[in-house]
Length: 135
Image (cartoon, rainbow, N blue to C red; front, top):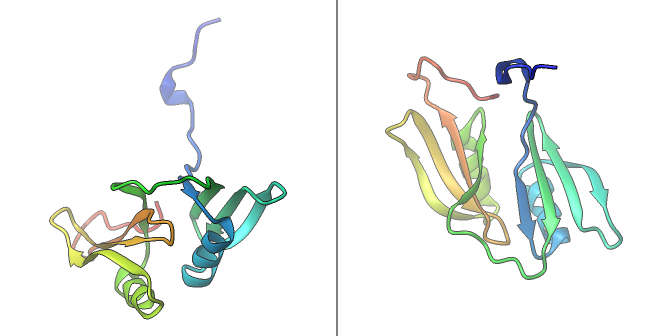
């Protein structure tokens, strides 16, 4: 039987996996500060969470000896990056890179979660003809 062409295979959502030292602290940050909701947890004690908000999904795994990366572990598109940046500042979130208009058509900033995981958050600028926030 011949193999179908790769173009015949439809890919679904992709969810970044983020390692954290303390899963309760991570849950609090992502739910209370960023507004995600926990839709699944596994283990006793809990060692894995699935968090969702709108079209975004994050998989969080407990790793007691986790050391954060110096690169971004996730990029998240939002509909109002300026408002989210202000919200994060008001809630004491560590901002790694300040909010700025980028030469590649986005307005973005980078934050660090309580474990130091860097998350790049952006919005395509309105002058970008291919502006999308939900892909």
